[in-house]
Length: 389
Image (cartoon, rainbow, N blue to C red):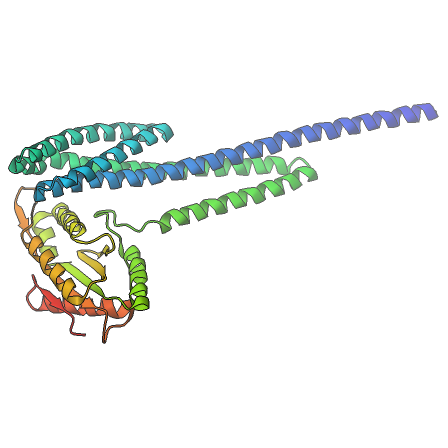
C-alpha cells in the first residue's frame, strides 16, 4: 500500500514537472513573441521617422533646385549653379534612400513618378545653365518661364507633398495595426497563469516606454521644424530664438545691432491679379533675393504672410539703412510672371531700427522696427523709414 502511494506521489511529481516544463516553454514562446513584436515596432518607428525626415528633405531640395535656377536666370550669376548642383545631389540621395525604405505600393508608385519628373526637370535645368554659361540670358529666362518648366515645377512640388502625406498615412495605419496586434497578444497572455500575468506586466511596461519614446521622437521632429515650407527661410519661431541669442550677445559685449522689418506692398492685389501661385513665386523670389543680400551671421526669417525680418549683428542703424535701400531698389527692379505670363512687379516697405538709447531688448528692437515699417507704409510705401527711438 505504501509502495502504491509512493508511486502515485512520484507520478504526481512527474506531471508537476511536465506542467512546469510546458508552462516554461509557453512563457518562453510568449516572451519571444513579445520581444519580436517590440523589435518590429521599434524598427518600424525608426524607419518611418526616417522616411518622414527624408520626405521633408526631398521637398526642401526640390525647392532649392527651383529657387537656385530662378536666381541664376534672374541675376545671371553662375555661382548659383554650384548650389543648384548641391541640391540636385541631395535630392538624388534622398530618392535612393526612399527606394531602400519604402514598401507601400502607393509610396513606391509616387516615388517612381517623382523620379521621372525630377529627371525631366534636370534636363530643363541643364539647358538653362548651358544657356547662361554661353551668355544667352534671355534664352535661359525663356526656358524658366516656359510652360514645360512651370508645369514640371508644380508637378514636382505636388508630388513631394503627396509623398509626404502618403508616408504620414502609412505611419498611422501601420501603427494602428501594431497596437491591435499587441492588445490581442496581451489578452492571450493574461489568460494563461499568474506567471504569465507577471511577464505581461513587464511587457506592457516596456510597451508603455516604447510609446513614450515614440511621442518624444515625434515631439523632437516637430520641435526641429524651424523653417518655412514655401521659402525655406526660418519661420517666426526659429527667427525669434535666433534673435534672442543675437540680442543677448549684443547687450553682453556692447556691440551694435540693427533690425529690418520688410513687408510686400499691396500683396493682396498681387494674389488677386496673378493668383496665389504668382504670390507664392513673389515670396520665393523675395526670399532668394534677401538670402543673397544678408551675411551668414545675420538672422533672416519669414515672420508670416508677406512679412520678413532681418537681424543684423555688428551693424549700426546707418548700415541697416544702406542695406534696406539696396533691398528696396532690387525688389522694385524684380519682375515675376503670373500663370498667364503677365509680368508682375512689386515693391516693399522697410522699417529699420537699431539697439541704443530708447531701445532695449528684443521686444523693444522689434517694436521700433515695426513702428518704422508702419510709418513707411503710411508714408506711401516703396520706401525705407528708420526708427526715431
